[in-house]
Image (tube, rainbow over the protein chains, first blue to last red):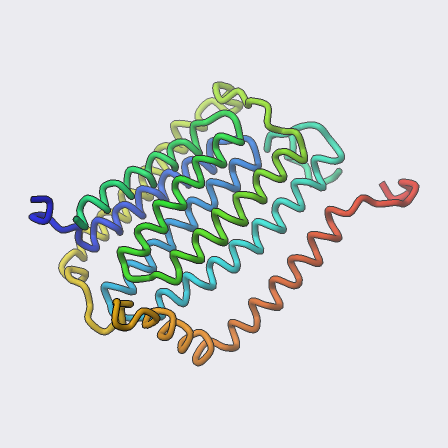
Length: 105
Length: 179
């Protein structure tokens, strides 16, 4: 049966580490600012998975409370970031991060 | 059974994450992100965090990804980006080294502390059939008890974010003297 091997907490933590690494790689490589934001979301989700796993492992509900606040802050961050991107895209047509190397409009 | 759930959810998470960083079309990347977020929600459920799993699906998959798609459609930037252009020559190898290095360090720390994190703790009230709202009760007692000040601050944060975004995204009606 499949129930011979049970996934331990370490499996979840390692998966979260791999997800964080993929997200970090994506932020450094991709040039579209929207996709860079998506990679930041990947990293935030990796951290959330780590918090929930450790909340279970250490029997502390505060891990889940932190995830709740991270979700709120992530939503606010996406709203502000996309607002900035919309404001920039109105002024110019360049869609890659390389075109945005100067703060001056 | 738990192994099966873990393997399927892990494949969803990793497949979606690789899709986000490899798809050249931003719409495809956003849809891959949905796959990853659902995989994370499944893992939340298997860790007895039912409330967070629901919030994950509603807020992330339901609101944030829709916001991404909305902006993509609004700006019309859904044309394919050429992912083969590499403006700085050593950027990708360096990024690979940094990403793999961070991953390796964290995994080494996890493996080293494997004995501390072995089993499931018993102090967390999990939702069961007899007590279906145990997780929400415990979470609410913490959020509205010990962390009520932080909770109020997040409401201020959301208000500031909304007002700031409206201000930034508003089309300025002036004659362009300040531009």
